[in-house]
Image (cartoon, rainbow, N blue to C red; front, top):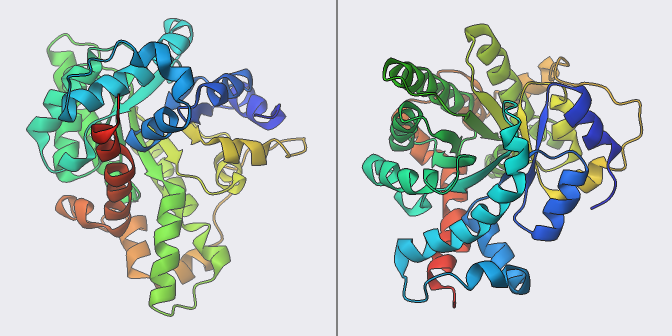
Amino acid sequence: MKDNPYLKWLGSETASIYWHDSAIIAEQEGAFSNGATGMTTNPFLINGTLSADRASWKPQLAIVDRNLSGDDKVLALMKAVTGYFAQKVEPIFRLGTAGKGYVCAQTNPNSTGDTEYMVAQAKILASWAPNIVIKLPATAAGIRAYEECVALGFNVAATLSFTVPQVLAVAEARKRGRARALAQGVKPGLAIAVLMVGRLDDYLRDVAKDSRSSVRESDIIQAGTACIKRAYAIFQEKGFDGFLMPAGCRGGYHIKALAGARMIMSIAPKIADALADEKGPFVEGIADPVPKDAIERLMTLPEFRKAYEPDGMRLEEFITFGSTNRTTSQFIESGWNPLVNMAL
């Protein structure tokens, strides 16, 4: 990765925290030299690194039991990757700075509707290292699991999340789980609510084309930004203590529009490289509103209204939202299931 003055500025001179969105060893080293202090992974990224860079993972794979199958096999492969990175960032974690020094591990995306299954798997993931963040889906069942994990003191992130109503439901679950943890003398862990800004844009672009909407491309690329900015304002107003995490970004414009926010930003290498070309002086963008006329045009799309309005969807509708189905399918078909079938 390139030397990146922008990301160094973002992570050191603003309230924003930069996490690296990749599981490639060489990319991780470059990202942390530019100020990254944590990592996001998922089954798709883990399958990608084990498939493309098998040689680098030979020492970790050598201790994986060749007789494992199904979930046990996938968890062992995930542990090989996330465990390696968790050790790498542990010195940052030991400094005790909120939101820094963590690595994510995700539960099985084939089971986004099974609370008990997800909690049981979360307990396994949490046992790997104190700086593992357990990724759970922002479905009704996943949010119930999220609350339970918060109550147990685990570090948790709600993924498969694209909308204001989803992240607000996650924040309320954090609040309930935190109260339960404290009542039991348990220290609450890190709490994150992801909003996949670029994946929402991708979905709305197709919706707009399918409906022959007059919404412009310049509006579409601001849809996810508008949603997370609205969520951020509500988080501040209500005093929610969890972090929002913009993820699935499609360009440096997503990061620049949110720079300065107290958020943990998941930034993929290609986005980082685009930001490396930015020339200073750098400025924070979180206080700049999305143009009112762009939001008005986006509001003609019912799917955007679902994503933007705090009460745009009911809890039980989260699992059926278009972006949720698309991304769940990718995590299954290009992540978890290939790991089940991976030759050891």
